[in-house]
Image 1 (cartoon, one colour):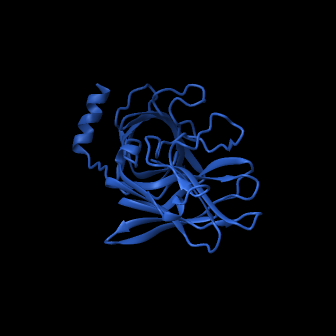
Image 2: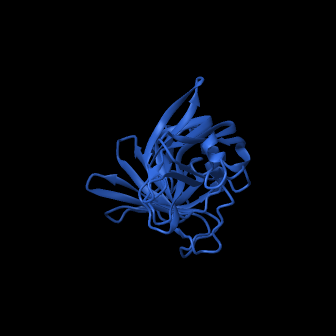
Image 3: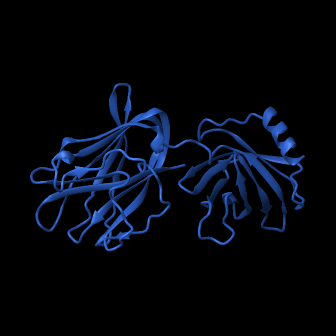
Length: 294
């Protein structure tokens, strides 16, 4: 009955699903009994930056929280993502807890003065498409990565854009870490410091905002310094983000998470990196493990 009522409301309410600027309605009641009676509603806008929930209500109240990865190490984690977020109301706030089932977010809420109840909302935040291996129709890299020796890159393989959900370092003495899978490029540059790039074409325009990219430090410095994220738009490249890669400990490979200033949609991307000087006076660049997050 609960799901039937929710489906009916979805059919008549002005929900939309195509962008992070869509208006959503959080339906709630003030009786904590496990069933939402749809007594009241909040108009709001929410988005995800990685696992972080961000947004505002129509009244301008800030929303912040997190969505948990499924089957993680946390107690109680299973095949349905759990979430928690807060709506800040001046000096007080309301807390919302629950789990996600497809596009249904359902759970319980608590107020600062003992208020409580059930709530639900309907959104595709966790079902939106981000680029995956099966969306790639072409991958290619600048010629500098094709010279052989320390100038090389992996061919397209089924581990491209696969996310490990880990930003922990992979130390070089770990036997299970395999750089032959997924995206991996490296180059030694004797002279100059021109940007070195790789490119991906997707089968259709894909939404992108949060992504992860890794590099390496063998004791001679982190082999990625600065890079740009470009999209192909109206017949030319447009830079939509410029980033600095923080130093990592040696000897290890490690990924870091980055956010574009806004959600972008494109069917072709380019990441261009500048080399970094190491202790042997050579210029090097190494990139690996690109993946995207909802």
